[in-house]
Structures are given as structure tokens and as C-alpha cells.
Length: 221
Image 1 (spheres, rainbow, N blue to C red):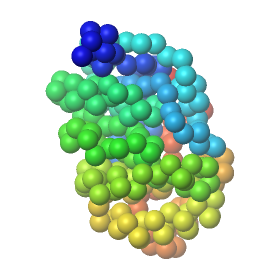
Image 2 (cartoon, one colour):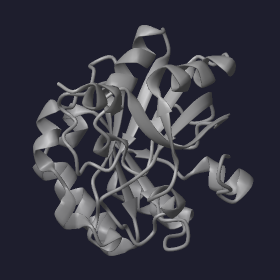
Image 3 (cartoon, helix red, strand yellow):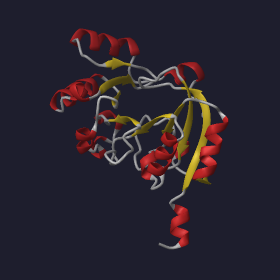
Image 4 (tube, rainbow, N blue to C red):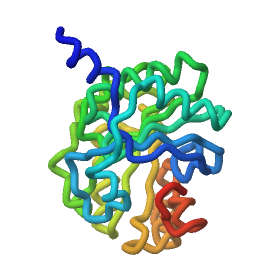
């Protein structure tokens, strides 16, 4: 391996590193350091982080870890974009775990999650038809999920909700992991989704994105 290749494997393109409250998943409300990696192969119609598609700065892994340490937090979330699109993401996740953090990754479900360090909490999307990226779902990821992982559906309407119910049943997701249903911020009223879940007695977790209600989805919040 050339020295240039070796150095590349220890570098990541970073859009931002910031400290905020976790806005999603079972860790919602917990102060967390977010490491947002640059780049994503998907273009979901409701994406709220298009600024992470390109740009960013190359950082050495050691420098990323040092910035995370400065926040003195217990929880770290690696997100994107699609963080697993970068070769060094797995190395970053393992290094964070080695330092004693509770580490989660937010992933689109379009990349292989099976080789992610088992100490990491995987929060994996399954893209609905309303996202425009349903075809990118990597359903073989489901076999790797455990009870510590979570699957998230962002719903753009009643059709997406009915579609999600079918996927949940076909893949027996409720038996495998936590299932999260979230309303797309402008497409579905949270109260409507809550009513659908209650009416169907669906054993899932309702959530909406806390940061959008607190800070109107400002970057770095």
C-alpha cells in the first residue's frame, strides 16, 4: 500500500462537528456531539442536509477525535449525508467506541451496515416511496440488525404509512429492533400520524425531529 493510500484511510471529509441535543431516535433529548460527514449518494425529496452533499474539509482522524473530546460529552452521533459512503467511517466509529463514548450512526439504509462495529447503535432508514429513493433500500441489512438497533421510516403521507406497515410486517421488524415512524416535516401532521398508529395499535415508536421544532433546522443545531 502506498503512503498516500494509507494516509487517505485515516482521513475523513467533514462538513461539521457540533454539540446539540439529539433530535431523533431513542436518544432524543440527550446532549450529543454530532460528526457530520460530507457526501451522500441519495437525493431524498425531503432532505434537510443538502449542504452536506459536497464541500467540507479533510481532517485527520486524530483531529476529529480531539475536537470531539473538547465537548466532554458521553454521546456521539456520526451522521451525514451518508457517513458510510466514506471509507474511513468504520475506523472513526471504532475509534470513538474505544474512547468510551456511546456511539450511534444515522444511515440511509442504502449502504452495507453489517460490518459496522457491533458496539455502535445503528439508526437505519428505510426509504419510503414518497422519499423518491425507495429503490436504494438495501433490505439485506435487516438480517444484521439487533435489539440495540433502530429502523426509521420518514413518512410523506398516508400512502407511505400503509407502505411502511407492509414492510414492517413482511420483515418482522418489530421482533428485530426498535421501529420509529416520523412525519415528514411539512407533508404530514404529527397528530395525524399519532392517530394512525393508535388506531392500528401498531407497536412502534412515534417521533418527530426535535431540532426542527426548537431551532427550525439551523445547521449546527
